Image (cartoon, rainbow, N blue to C red):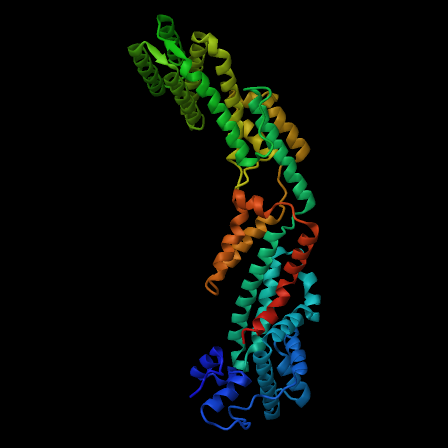
Length: 498
């Protein structure tokens, strides 16, 4: 038996006993190969007769009517929706359309998509979701998919199940197409983009103010924003400390011992409850013992003690009740250390003071950065102003009340001019919604998992630079138009899955 004239696809259909999917040429070749007659036989071999032009029109009508075109035509031509004549004509139309799709697949694809994109109901519904973003697109795509699924049902009993499948297909496809369009050409509102740029400049100004403590000419590089700028400043302060601290040394002397005792006694005269007096005195005595045993503290060791004292002070500053009083005691002890370091190292006192002053300002920026969200790391003037107030250690926030706290002038002025919130450009919300929706659809189509990764790509540094770089206006407009049309492609795409 010579099967060489039959295509591999037709052979697969024949082996699976899916003769309705075998092409006309394949059926004829199969009959010849098996020794049968080539004369038309309606049961198997004879292809359904049809007019290609008429079926192309019916294909477009299917895309435009959610695949209800066969039912509508049969109803109009027979004047019934349930008679035997209606059912016979409907099934005949379905057979003709199925044969057309097999013989002219490319034409069928084009006409169904064209019908879906040109449907009058699409033009009527589009204003309803305009401005609703990705969620609106997905909702429209889901609705169109559900209607199309219902139209594809062979019998009325199949409509609910087909509608659910079609809705899931339409929502997933629209999320993928619309989300991809937003990544290729994000639609950022001009006013939001301008405000974001202003905040980036404000962040740069704050960082440069910190750096001026180290060197009046030192500035953040032009291409460093967000967390990159933060790391640049952090590294610069660290380098300043690294350059000066190893050169420092503090010698233990009777005068140093007296200074320690003075601090300890200051908080032993009613300023602390007895239990806390004992705790603080024990800390000071342990420090004195360690110091006197070595006689000389190298700069790195002295710097570590100073930092430990600062951490103790900060931790007690947020404690409850009388324990908060210990914050002032540890802060005074830290101040003693700082004075010892500077007084005994006059040659390096200026450089050490630069590092300490820069770090004091940088703490405000650190606190503001902790309030940001997302990968960008851009804080608002209000977040910096809140950080300035939070880190004010003066009694009853007196320095902040007077407007004299570190970084307060910059943060206060910027808050008055720029406002307190970064306006949403729409890209983050749409991207995260896209990730949620496409991720939720992975149980329908594994490809949606890949779209989830694509949707989250912009929220990583290099992805953001690649995806949100300026676009050619013509390209961006074309992508936006294609994205807006994506829900209307669902009926055509779903029809092709028959």
